[in-house]
Image (cartoon, rainbow, N blue to C red):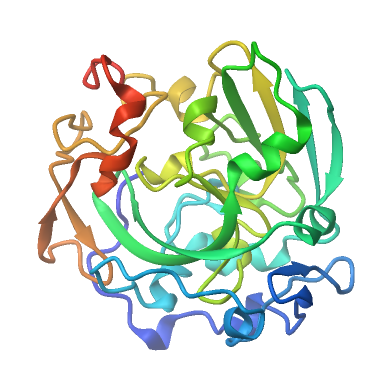
Length: 317
């Protein structure tokens, strides 16, 4: 997971949006809800003015400059499409994202499968401007479009003994060349997890869009998790399965390298990665040798601190 470039990405090298996003649009059911419509098998996008046309308020400013869209959609970790930061933007256009269903089970009263279109029919979408901090000491600020994780989980009625939420990414080797690569060290399908109280925190969202448009494939289309106080690998992409469990689930990076990637993965400047310091970060756009800024505990989201009262956050990294 090392950074593989030492230069700023010029805009002339950015893959044109038309390559990976079709002109499929959302159709509004009301001023505060939207439902997908389109042709199965296509990628899809929103017009630039989607948020304002649907009556959604723009996310509140956080006092930091938003990362240019071309960087956020070009510089990604998505190992299903390769280990290089630019691999997803070059290869993910082949991913079929429609139709898309979610299977929800485990310790819930109403397990079942639901189409993404049906999820969005009666859920209000909103824009959230969040920092996303990656383990490799780079970060970005992205305007995500989505809704609280809790809004989806509660419709399946979590049982009293549910303590954790396990998320699983799509496994489709024919469309995901990274899965077939002999160089990949990842055990697919990709799995991540949260404690249930973390998933229920208002900051944790399921995202279906960014920059006023539907997620491009390389950013986790059509449905991903965003947990802004944790390192980026926790924000699992292209989710197809959600399970509520009594025990802490085994997660992909924690299984692959437990000495490097803990289950919690809270942004913590006091806990270094074995191969580099996490005390500082580079905010994109920049070069590998660009100016660094100080990393903040919980990525600056102090409101989640109460979730970890009494815990040793160096041992529970």
